[in-house]
Length: 94
Image (cartoon, rainbow, N blue to C red; front, side, top):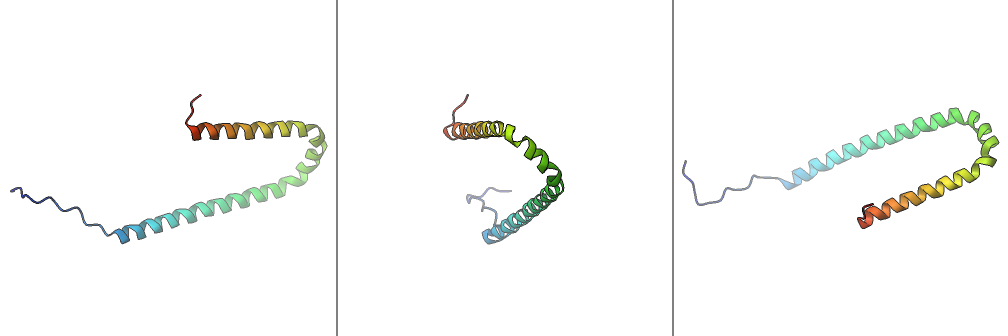
């Protein structure tokens, strides 16, 4: 075949079709993720509904002595999350 001086034309694309297909794919992913979230929330709710009548008396009995540990753990966790977020935002390496 002979070479021509003209540059080959780019492949034809229908941008509106591509956008419509991408929109349907994203909606499908959204619905699938939403279904998993609803199912997980329902399962955790049912589990807590079954467990809490037995767990509440035990938590009430130990709650007086465990509060300092809960507060210290919460402060340490929030501090760690804040430190890690700041480190990533500023691009620091440790």
